[in-house]
Amino acid sequence: MSFVMRKRDFLSIADFSSNELTELLNRARRLKVGEDHSQLTGKSLAMIFRKSSTRTRISFEVGMTQLGGHALFISDHDSQIGRGEPIHDTAKVLSRYVDGIMIRTFGHEEVEELSRHSSVPVINGLTDLLHPCQVVADLQTVAEEFGPNYPERTVAWIGDGNNMANSWLNAAYRLGFSVRLACPEGYDPDPSIFKRAGKMADILLTRDPFEAVQGADVVTTDVWASMGQEEEARERMGAFAGFSVDDALMEQAIPEAMFLHCLPAHRGEEVSSSVIDGTQSRIFNEAENRLHAQKAILLELLG
Ligand code: CP
Ligand code: NVA
Image (cartoon, rainbow, N blue to C red; front, top):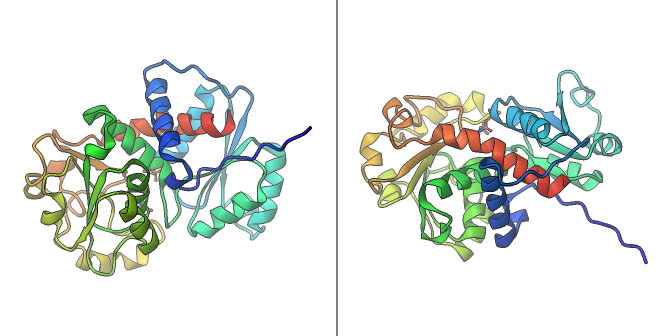
């Protein structure tokens, strides 16, 4: 009798069940404290970057090295992808060389297409729709502060209903914590992701940042113009006026609330310097946790 092992992808937080996500977060914690010594000896990860990156590139590359494997950086500019080689051909070619593919790109459909045509696991390193790897690191950071009892927590999202907001909603869908989003009109999260999260968790969408942060444990935001939206930056500055996370806003959250930001940040725009550099900010723990979270994801998929 023979059977085919199905490859496992990580395109969205929702690809993992609640138990799998909990196990992934446990593994990230164990990796951080040196209790998990699993290896990916001799394995290779191709990393396709069609947008810039500091944390995602470095955490995946260092993560693979620490696990005894190897990562290859592939950009648009110096590979045939930038010259228009179809993504389905790239998927099939890379699958003959490497054990996994991580991709950061614009349209989410491109990652889905890559996944359909590759025979090795595909990891979403950010699309216009989702940024799941970042939110795994964020969830790890939340547990470090408040423990792993996610359903007891309330997360306030202030600003753009972007890839980060959508991934927080997917995390709430799986882990059952409350999300209170304050987004200006026209910048809401993806409607189907929002609706699905609302079936499993307490989700609020308001136009008032002060309403969103009332009693929140976690206050988080992101840039007003994401990668690929540079031309809208001016218009967005106007639309997001009043959506900065500053001290007055933080005071509405619980006194022990933490501030998170995936980075890079624009101080003085979506967040004041006093908040991002203040005592409630956990941004560098959050950035560090990218490494542990990435290693956990790599071990689950490539191990
Ligand atoms: N937060 C994050 O994904 O950072 P990079 O864009 O630097 O990878
Ligand atoms: N929303 C941001 C996240 C960067 C890590 C972007 O997509 O540019």
